[in-house]
Image (cartoon, rainbow, N blue to C red; front, side, top):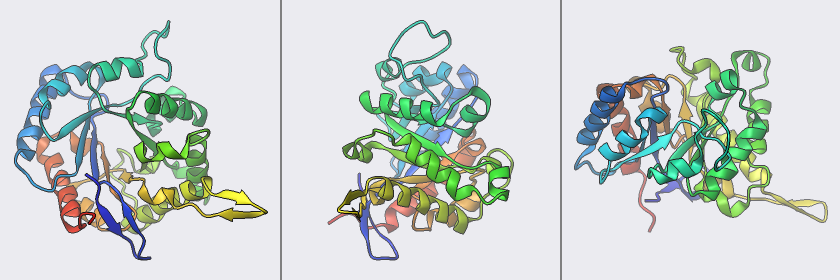
Length: 284
């Protein structure tokens, strides 16, 4: 359910709190079933829960979907092809995902960009496919260590956001989630300082606003559509640092990697999300 967030500038927007766990290439069938069940049990009867999304490997999607049925926990895929079907050995289509009641999909994760040839152009194609099939896309953006050290963080993030949104209608923005995940902080134990993560998350939102601003007579009509888009932070998120991150204006949730692989580590992060939901008043 939407929440009303009042920022430091007094701008009121509805932004959801989302805690997503990306299991990556981990967990066997039995292990995944056990973990999903433990998370479902851990949030049962809890109040003010954020949106909780588990993103297991493709091999576990069916089982995790079954294990989380009729609970507050939702299921997402870690990737998908942008085509509905065809001779594309090893790929999984959006049609396959929706047929399994999968509701979310990660798009453009840095590991897909780094190891599997994902580009800004294919991120855009996947985003369009997700929207066509009513999947909630979590679009990942972020800079490498070299890019950060060269002072290119803002340019890289702006370029990735703008490229993802190419030819996306403004009316579809309410379905989109962004995640800022600095590549140098993923799986390294290094965490982007909370204030800097907040600044870049705000930059993502500002870039969306700029992208949908309209020019008339040489002047732009400013857009505020980005204020409604949830922006998550991902990069060595842990129970020890998540409260600080979620207390900030522009961070609306977490994309969690390693800490999502045990219920003992993931449930406290969900609880941090619940605290954020509780302290943000409902829309009147």
